Image 1 (cartoon, rainbow, N blue to C red):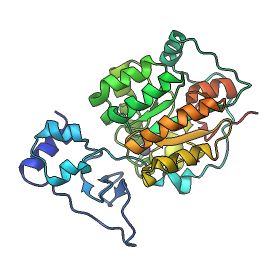
Image 2: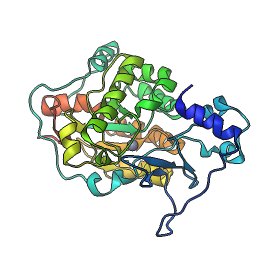
Image 3: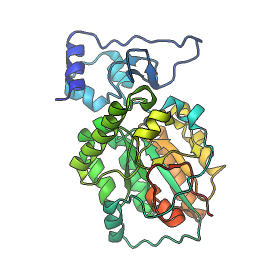
Length: 327
Ligand code: ZN
């Protein structure tokens, strides 16, 4: 049992799970997000879609069940559903400012290449390609729907996972790898790295990578910064290629499949890196429309490492990628 399961069980036993809604200082509706409450370096609390605050990140319904059953009404109403999404993934540092200009043969993901061989699949660099990326999982109830659809259309995607959620979703993680998709590093506990020191940053990155490797045998080739937040310390500490995005669907905010679909299909261009989140059924619903339509329009659905390989000759350490337009 993990610390958060213990905490959850203890909390349930003590009747402490009645979460208290909080409101932002400006009285705007609380968004599902990590909220820094100045509890210390990188310490954040989780605010779910109903505005409830939790000490643990993304406690899912299945975890709540495992932790003890007699949940409060809040539990049963799904406040325990994993939330995610860098709230600031659409602001400030999240605004794309350029395109990576990598060169050379950088990191790759052998497992993805191996698995890709299992299915006959040819990527034509002269044809348009898009990298769909799903953050904050793994979360099987949504992830497996996305994987089913990708399998149907022979597409690939990249899943930026939060390390501490990986062991509980080992089956999905192994499926992701087996079916030729890419696992990305979204840190161990989704702390904003710009609030941590160098050692803490490395621990967040390395612990995620170690966990992923232990569960599914591959080491993530790229890092996605929670919230897209970075500063000089972060950039110095993260040697791995950093992959951000140039199309932000805001799916975590709208929780509306049709808006998410429009955010992609109304703007998509060759070389885009599209940000979605694995935690929401609405995002899964959107993916089930986006994947067939992009395929229908002639887009090749590739992983970020594939896109880097075909568009940039590979990934380069220390580089930040927002998109990979044809050059
Ligand atoms: Zn995130």
